[in-house]
Length: 509
Image 1 (tube, rainbow, N blue to C red):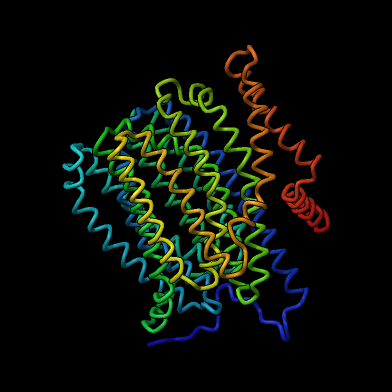
Image 2 (tube, rainbow, N blue to C red; image 1 turned 120 degrees about the horizontal axis):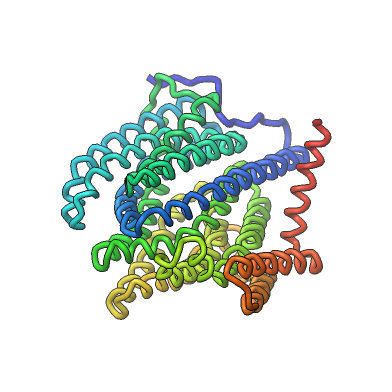
């Protein structure tokens, strides 16, 4: 029986009359605060994760990472069913209440239990397919993440709905630090691949537990099939889109792991690791704030266009120096941090840097489509893109037959997807690809000039570590200095956010 609870998680008070300047100011304040806390969360978590990754890469063998990469393929595909679509449906629904949240919680938990049982039973078959008996027990242990993800996805939807991103900060940082300690301790004790299992599983567990005690929401003994129908009608298209994305993204790893070797897969994945660590953390910070912000003003297409434009500009401005700089110093970074045994990962790292630079544009183009409730368009876009992507992948394997060609194909596909994603944005609210490129061209030109300065600094006759430090300092000084001299719009926006936050802190103290 359906029961309506008066408490509505994340529901904003409705003002009388038309939206005024006060409401816009409130939303701007929430976006600014949200960006600050999500950036702080991601930057600190990224720092800890990078250090842990470096330590573990030096302690463990590439084959250990290859095993985890294969297991992660199956777990990440299963996770799509419990983390994608329905959480976004809760955020997108304007008046989602406890009945909606509880219904999605029990539904996701049930799906997670069924999927984990399937993984548990099929683990020996997967191990036999890849000819590695260790894969079976690793899948059965690490697969517990599915149950934790089903709980965590609803918790995160609740926090995003309320735009209370400070709670993410506490949960993420605590989980990252504790899991880092667990992973490094087990690696030092000689547990091999199980050190990575402990790190990933502990991170998910701590994150979920901390959020449980940080937020007010608890699942209630209520469930409504009627509410589920409405949420599923939106969420299933998002789920299908995410499933296509997950299968497509992991298909390369499946092919590399089977056709080549576990070490090749480890080099391929490690090459992507550092660029994706940069882009996914920053990009997820922007999207987790921009999505609910756009959902709140979805009836005002001009506001949606402004938020999308801001997201692209800021995202590219933040990622450009990091990714282009990393591509320039890729070899000395790998040699210094990971040791020479990981040098085959260098070309994959460089390709991933250029590929990841397009991510903020992809995300900004897709966020309005999702926030405006057009999950049907989102699904159609994903189907078209994956058909193109599979063609590129097939050509890479058939005509070139190398792991490097497969990696290069991801960049070719990403450029094609950029055109496809931008097409609907132009139709929805008049912000197309040419306008996007005009907005980011000054940043790309600045980043290219910075890369040239970093490369020239690398010609100095210095030892490896001092030379790398000089290159980083030259790149940072060049990028920030020219940003200030040319009064880059994104630079001034970020400075204004920082000044505003510090001013409010002083006023409250």
